[in-house]
Length: 137
Image (cartoon, rainbow, N blue to C red; front, top):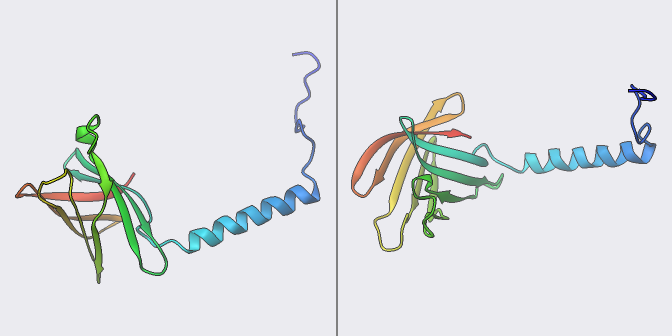
């Protein structure tokens, strides 16, 4: 293309104020990341290759755990998501319990670290036990 200038930013070089603002943003982001624990983020619970639950966990540096779940097997259902009722971290194990549908038995997932950031354990759903893994998505 004729008249095209390469190697130049359309807005010019960042100003001193631009660089200071970016440095403050990076520092704020790093500080907020420091307040999060190792379980913070999006996780997927699978039995083999079958995706059973998506979890969004909040792991505060204070040790408080909170979470929400979604059942991808029932995408169109109005009750296919909710909050985790109970999350307990006991030593290296993690247990989550929640009601997948109103009035049904509670789902229980008990996990232990499996290496490389993954977890493995057992899910009890409608009286059936399944071996599962939990990994970051």
